[in-house]
Picture 1 (cartoon, protein in one colour):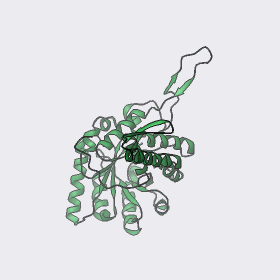
Picture 2: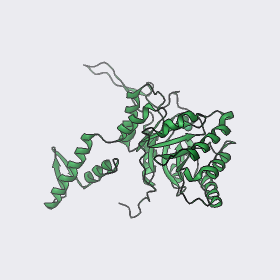
Picture 3: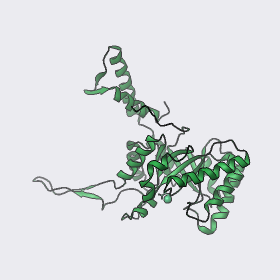
Picture 4: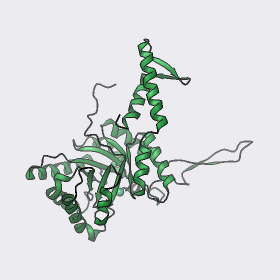
Amino acid sequence: MSFIQPVKPISRLNRSELAVPGSQPKFFEKALNSQADVIFLDLEDAVAPEEKPRARKNIIEALNDLDWSAKTISVRINGLDTQWMYQDVIEVVEQAGQFVDLIMIPKVGTASDVYALDMLVSQIQMAKGFTKTIGFELIIETALGMQNLAEIAGGSKRNESLHFGVADYAASIGARTTNIGGANSNYSILTDSTESNLRQVHWGDMWHYALSKMVVVARANGLRPIDGPFGDFSDADGFKAAALRASSLGCEGKWAIHPSQIVLANETMNPSPEEISKAKQIISAMGKAESEGKGAATLDGKLIDYASIRQAEALLKKLGE
Ligand code: GLV
Ligand code: MG
């Protein structure tokens, strides 16, 4: 291993991240009483332009009036290229900064975007005398953001997590889909025909490269990788399959754009009882091997070694064990 290791910022349970439009205050208390690990109150794409000032007020009032302490609470601000972002930050942080855990920055394209926000938030906190650390969640959802991932990830000590914003990313790269996440029948392989078999269509995962790249960069910088939205909230199986793929690649959580997706995300992001039991068996079999002076062992007919311990420990860490 390299002598230099990524410094991990605050660790938080982030299996599910519920999106709640700031223009819909009737949903705030419901979100607070939900099973979501993180809630983000949205000022960006779920809020119409004329609703932005009202949404800001709703969020500020709710942050001050409700007790959010049992949750991790985030506010998604508008992008740096809009007319709204500066007021989002100034009003929310000045008037409710002590209750905000995270600010979610959409469409981050360069490390300077993160620097600019860090400077603004730091100034407001100094002026107001707030000592609470406000972390950043960065949505990677543009071609530019994907290109500059490494610099962005290392762009501020406030950075806590990277999120894959599949909808905006699809638009940004000119992908041929109008789905928000999920499968695309056009992204498939047609197998060669064999003597006994007709040709078959195998669907691929068109987001594999982008999500995997984001996970790698997040981990190299000590940040949580989080998978973004799955738009078809009536398709629980499709959501679970997407969440399982993300979790298999290393993501710690997934967005819920509908309350029904919260439990699905929490359950899918937790390793199954079988995976947990296997991880524990590996650790104990390796402990026994080590006590016998061996660096490798056989478990269920397969080789395990010290790397297997690290894999098992990484899996158990998802449970906070
Ligand atoms: C999220 O913001 C997305 O664009 O998918
Ligand atoms: Mg987006």
